Image (cartoon, rainbow, N blue to C red):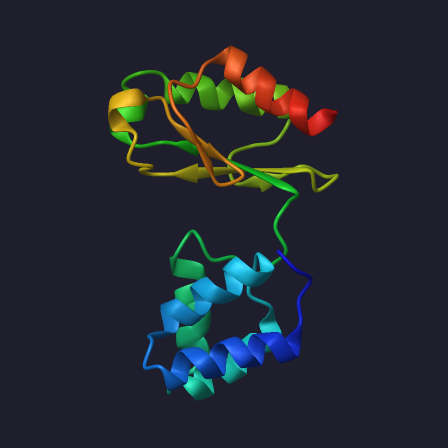
Length: 154
């Protein structure tokens, strides 16, 4: 991820619009490049995709993978779907919130880690599942949580 660059963002928006991609494709590319969608991109996105600014903002808020502020250094997404709940994801979530001092949906005050819910990672047979910095983690347990968190602290 790079720091926000308005000119690069405009280039991404223009390329997506010219190649007949949909708004969500441009949003995905912005997040892939910068980690988030800056407010400065709302008006150019609306213009390029013939949408209102409210529609663009609504799309950003609707999809959990899109964010409108810079992400934490590390993101831990814990599956909250029924199949993962059945094998202990609620217990794992409580363990992580206790160890980090942050609630699901929050970021640590130092910006090191965000704890986010996710509702399917495609690892239903190997739950509880999570994703840490984009990498899947199956059969999540306390030892794996400790390893993840110790890597952040070191």
